[in-house]
Amino acid sequence: MTDKFDPYKVLNIGRNSTDEEISAAYKAASRMYHPDRPGGGDSVKFSQCSDAKTLLLDKQKRNLYDRGGWEAVARYDQMKQAEQARQMKCEPVNLNLKVSLEQIYRHDSIPIKVDIPGGEEKFQMDLKLDPGMIGHGLCVEHRGISRPDCVTGDVIIHVELDSSRTQFKINGLDIIMEIKMQIADLLGFSLQIDHPSGTVYSITGKYENPDENGNMVYYFPTMGLTGGDDTGNMVVCITPDFSTLSKLPKRVVQDIQTLLSQSRKYESSSSKAIDITEKALSARQMRSRMRPMGGQQMMINGMPMPMGMMGGGPQDCKVQ
Image (cartoon, rainbow, N blue to C red; front, top):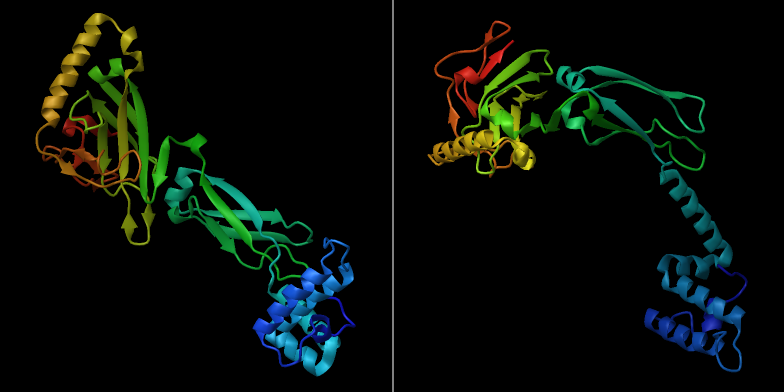
């Protein structure tokens, strides 16, 4: 701000002027001194008018000027700048961490050790994984970049599922596998599902009991991820790939058409909606029949598996 001038004299007002009077005086003076005024203005006076208005409309600075002149205003500005510097954080350090589904399932601890830009110390910690971290930034405060002009910055760790190592996707605590199946395989298929616990599941069957979108959905309660006291589900969604239909022999196409017709009739009976995901398995897609597994109890590592599956009968899934 320009010093060594009297803001009241520049605007031609008294020391008891109101804010309205200050604003009106500034408009008149700025028109008079504007550099683009016909006949020429005064750029120095124009700048002083702007500084005078800014000062006098700030009640705190106006009071300081009235008591101590421009020196008091300058000391105040320096103090505010120092305070803002103390409150300002250095820019954050962003770290990207890809982890496997098995690591998330087990809640593994991942050792992290990286260099901090501009510093001699390394950032290091053991990060205990939790499903809630996926897709979100975990902020570790005041462990990042440090400079004298600002507060030590944060380290933000972005945890992502390594999709190259699994067919599953994560939605909350649910683990979801979406499979596009060739049309010819709908007459009879067998799938191997590698669960992150290490257990391998086999799903066998044919195209029957689809949901309203034509998908077969197998739903395994409490076989997803754990978080706190909650446990998610494992969901396998099989989507027919009709793009290859024209390449199949006519006899196979007729068999598939018969199968699809029977499935639609079967699916038209009463069904129960179950909410599982927000995308492919939304409430509309999950309207499919849920049936107990024929009274048979599956055993996993000596423990009974929860009953209930969508998409088929007890012969359709077994543990290997």
